[in-house]
Picture: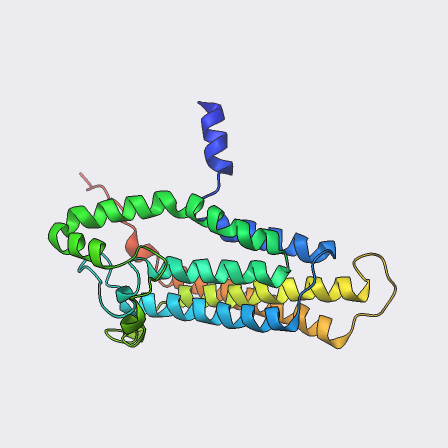
Length: 245
């Protein structure tokens, strides 16, 4: 029993996959064995922006547990938020320059997210049996198909920015912080500082370090203020206070 609990805590799942990806990407960058070209840098940054857009549009479209969302970005895939996560994580790995990890990531993704897909789809099929059966047959799970082109033109439909919470903005800032950290690792290795060189830190390295810190603080603050303002507390159900006799 104790062994099962320990394995559960250290197993890979949706909640810790990004942390694992960031650590592996940082270690790859600091190893000095992987080169980051300008082309890969530009493509990875563009992919992270695209992933954040998918996540934003998902939150702007989603009406949780009230209706079955099948319009807007949901016309592309049944889980567009997780598609955004897939793109962001893959781009972070690409920033590390570790091509082996790039090819390994899809297996890690479906390993970590598989139970979540199964749990959410069982819930939705029970809550919206007829509608979800049609949605299941007509829309891919998480990776768009070749027939998804019309859905890209309707991604902005049925969206409202009022549905996007501060927590999501905080997560976007955290992604930017991770990008700066990985680029900073590459810069330190290139200057020889990570291997004990005595070269002074240049302005670019200082800017990346400052950017990582500022974005991390912003992300933490946005998520913390959302929690304190009731964004998360409002979703919790507390038992009523006992009546006085």
